[in-house]
Image (cartoon, protein in one colour):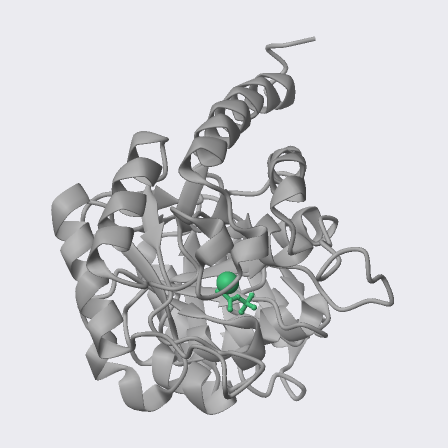
Length: 343
Ligand code: PEP
Ligand code: MN
C-alpha cells in the first residue's frame, strides 16, 4: 500500500503518521521524499488496514493498494530512479552509460592486467572477470577462485577500475569484502539463501536474470536482497532460454523498458551471454542502448580462441574499441532524441 502525502505536510506530521501506522498495523513504513511529493510505502500484511482511517488523516492526499508482490523494488514506492554510487564516486543509473568489461574467467596476471588496461582505454568504467565460475560441466575450468580475486585486485590497483565478479556461495561473502560489485549469476538468481545473506551487506549487487525466469520472478529476487536492507541492486538482462537455437540464449530487450517501468533499479544488458557469438555482440549492444539500458556487460579476452571459458562470445580488445566508440556515439544520439534536442 502507498500513501501519497499532501504537499506542504511537515516532517513532524510525517513522523507522527509513520509512527501511528507502525503501531496500529504492525507494518514497516518506508518514506520516499521527492521534489514534488512524499510517499509512504507500507510493507507487511496490509490486508486489514482501514483505508478510510488513513484517508481521513489531514496530511494524506491519496491511498493506493499495490498489486505487485514486490514493494521495495517497486517504482510506485520510489518514483525516482535509483542511482548506485560507489565509494570511488562511480555512478550507475544516473543517465550515463556504464560499461563493465573483461574476460569471462580471470586466467593469469598478465592476461587480466592487459585486458583491464585495454578495456579502460576503450572507455569501460568497470573491470569484470570471473574467479568462481559456474560451469555446466564439473570437468570444465572452475576459475582461479581466491587467486583470481587477488589478480582482480591487482588489476584494479594498476588501472583504478572498480571490480565486478561473481559469487557462488554465501560462505564466500567475507572473501568478497573488497570486491566493488558482487555479481549473482543467472544460475543463482533464485538461490534465496545467498540473496538473503547479500541483503545483509551494503555492497552493490549485480543480479542477472535467471535462464528461465519471468520478469516478476527476477524483480522478486531483487526484493529478497532489498528486504534484507541492501537497496544497491543492479539488474542484468542476459538472455533467456527459448526454443531458438541460433543463439546461445534469446536476448529479451523488451525486458529493459518493462523493468524500468515497474522498478526504479538500474538495468544493464549482457549481449555476450545472450547471443553466445562474438559477431552478434556489437549490434545487440547498440540495440541495448536504444532500449534504454543503463549499461552493458561485455566479455573481452586477449586471445578469445584460447580462452578457458566463453571464447566464442568474447571480443578482442580491438573489437571492443570499435564497439565502445559506436555505443557512446549512439548513446549521445539516443539522449538527444529522448530529450527532444534532435528531431
Ligand atoms: C558470467 O557472467 O560469466 C556468467 C556465467 O553469466 P550468466 O550467469 O549470465 O550465465
Ligand atoms: Mn562468461
